[in-house]
Length: 287
Image (cartoon, rainbow, N blue to C red; front, top):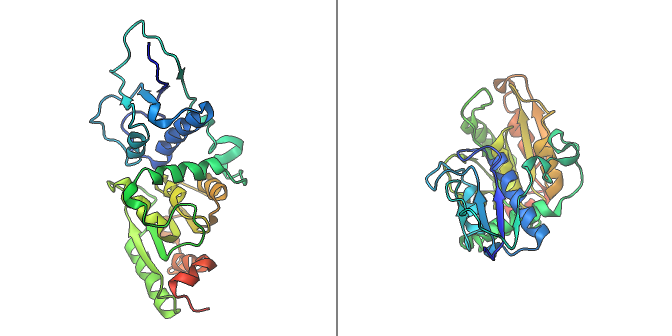
C-alpha cells in the first residue's frame, strides 16, 4: 500500500520537448491539482507516464518540476508500480487543455480577468531557487531597468535581434534614458535560474510571437510586454495577451506581413513608448 499521495500524469507534448509554453501548461496542471487536493508538494510523488528516462532532453522549465517534487521524486514511464499496488491517495490531473490559461478563449486573447493562481505559480517557481532570493521578487510592483528582447533565430519568425537592441540603446542615450539598458536574451539552453533573474530585472520584454514569450510569467507586476506578429503568426494568436492580463503586465503589439517588414526603428520606438512610468524612479529617467 502506498501511503503518500501520487499524481499520475501524461506530459502534453511527450518526453522530449523544448516549448516553454507547453511545458508551463504541464506544470500548471500539476500545481493546480496539488492546490485543489490540499496536498503538500514535499509529500507528493509523480508518475509521468510518457517520461522515458532521466536522460531525456528536458526543457529548462523541467528543473521546476524536479525541485517541486524533490521530496518523493518523479517516476518515469518504465517505473510503474507493481501489479496489485494499492494507493491511499491517487489522482490523474486533466489535460493542460483544461487549465486556467486556455479556458474562456484564452488562446485567442479573450480573457481579461486577473488569475491569482498564475501569479502564484510563477512566485512558487521562483521560490524554488534560493540563489535568487536576494533579487526583486516576482509580483513586486515597479519594474526594473532592463529592456529585454527574447531572441529567436530559426524559422520564418525571426528578426535581427542585435541590430534592434543597438537601435534601442542608441535612442535611450539621445533621449536621456541612459538609466535603462536593452539586451538580448537567448533562452535556448539557458538554465531556468538565469531566465528568472533576467525577467525579474526587466521593465519591458519584447520579441516575436513564440513559445519563448512564456517568460512573461516571470516579469514583475507593472512591467510591459511588446509582442511582434509576422510571417505565419497574426494577432489572432492571443496567448500572451491573455497571460499579460492575468498577471498585471501591460500588453501591446506590432504586426507586419514579413518579419523583415517592420519599418526601421519602429520596434525601438515602440519599446521606448511602453516603458512603465514607475520604472523612472530607479532608472534615472528624466521627466
